[in-house]
Length: 118
Ligand SMILES: [Cu+2]
Image 1 (cartoon, protein in one colour):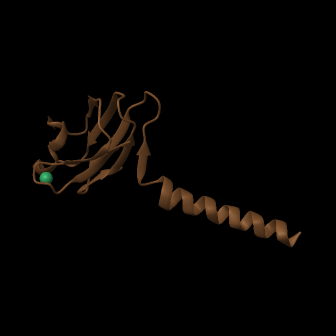
Image 2: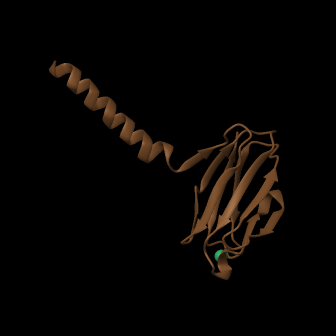
Image 3: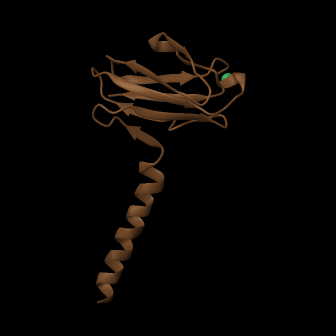
């Protein structure tokens, strides 16, 4: 019976590692659904978002940070800039065509995130 307990333990550790270090910091585009990004305490959460190329994706920003630093989000390479209302959701729908990494930031570049297109 001891071997079964060991296998269970290893599986549990694997699941915990996956959950906290691999699964958490990213968001994968769920089919059709918007990806919610919280803007708070100097970070976008999640800060790394993976989406497939050639398909429209909706990023739903929720800004909880009242400082003016957070009020705009810029996707420099995609030529997108939007004002983020405080405590309200704002959807930005875009269709990234070429694979690559696209940074998004506030206007002072303190908030930083990456849109990964593959
Ligand atoms: Cu800023």
